Length: 626
Image (cartoon, rainbow, N blue to C red):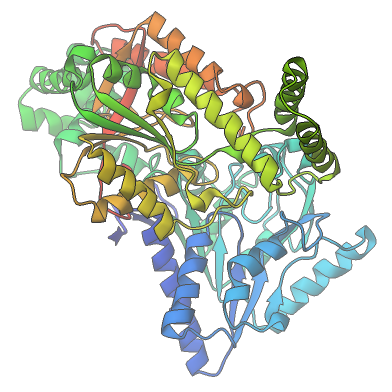
């Protein structure tokens, strides 16, 4: 179900749609585009679409392709203009938006190639200005853009209109912001390989579209979404210019909407229907605002922070304080309050997410005598740098020579791999041999990490789901083969409990897709439905108010967890997917786990050294984690 929730005195300056999941958003936007195409086709007029690239619009394009194949959606009268392209960038490059669009949309519908317009990244510099001017004329000649799709960058950019872009700007060559380049670093296997410039539609060009849909998903977009939706119009945040557009709408999943006032602090907007979860959220917020522990909040605190309705519901601050304190206390689950003697599957999207996000919980479950399987859903091989592989190759050759293990076969094989690594361009897809070697590196590291936690390496299952096996950052959709592999494991193990990654801020969607594979497999699973715990930690942590379980860790237990993370040596020192946070994963984990415990202490609960937070999740297909 997709919904628009509008409240009295909302600070939102633009219509916002919040949906249960990204799939619902993509479906809604795709159907709107299809309706525009059908209306204009009946009138024998072309539809002009402004299109975007990246992970945000992929679901829209997949639904439009399905509508074309199964319901006859006709693209013969459609004209398209893409937002941007890196510069310089040959059209056949893996990183080219030209290639992206033909692989993910144009090549699968009946659009005329002459109607496709994408900024060219392969022109000499002295021809770029002329090309940009011609791009603007082509949009005008087509009658203007009917529907424009946008994403939003972490700098608030739309297209590549970085901070400082003028509302009067047109299609032009721009210099990319350093944050934008860091976020894109994983696509290019290093910031140093990301182009410094790009060609982009200007703000004025975008705002001339008759209808605009901006989509954002994931917790990592929540802060900039709030700035764009609730903040003043600011040339430092280009997305705020959309506030003045009569046909613009922001489409969000719950994670991207998390910082909006109506979601984070809805009691500040007027009357609402209180639930136990909202009461906990409000009291935790009040405690943080006042700097008091929960049991020390008084009637004045509630009245001065617009929480008088809670006093009316419960009669006094003492009553509501006690209810919330007890609810928070019940969330704390030490080893004695965790399951024993159960069958547990821990699903780990990459071969390190288990220890990064739930290493402490996993160890306690093992200590409690639960039968544990750790299922690594993808190989994670594209996150291994070439220099790491070369270390292993050198070791293999030296060990083979020391013990006279083989003849010339190994040296020849290593030489072939070395020649490939030396000749390939940054971001070029690895050979099958290199992909397999990097896969084995991740597997060895994962087994070693489990042993560090005191868990036998034999508990590891490497599923190597097919959707991941593209050799590229962009993956295939979750297919029936992926779902079948998960279902086969469920059938074999008959688990009582699943631990599943609920961290949907993974920059390239692997966590989200792995979650989808599990939920789809559970639909046709014939066994008793298992309980599901959702963990986070690699990119974000669950807020205490949202968490259902708070699992304490001692200083020694956190040290052991960090030691297990260290076993993933190929992911240390220089994170392959740094994004904006350039710290190593162990540093992020240490800060978040200790920070969760510190907040629990400030709320007046018992003091712990560190804590992992988990949420009891949903197994319904298509529903994102809370």
